Image (cartoon, rainbow, N blue to C red; front, top):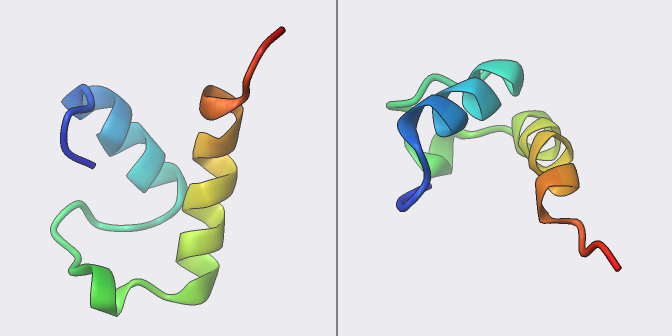
Length: 47
């Protein structure tokens, strides 16, 4: 999550229940889905 404000990244990870120091290979599918769902609204294209 490089390039993002630390507080934003920390909040997204907290909501997805992922410790910030967790290696990607140790992130479960459920955690990844939670993170995706947490971040998706922020990347939505607005017309």
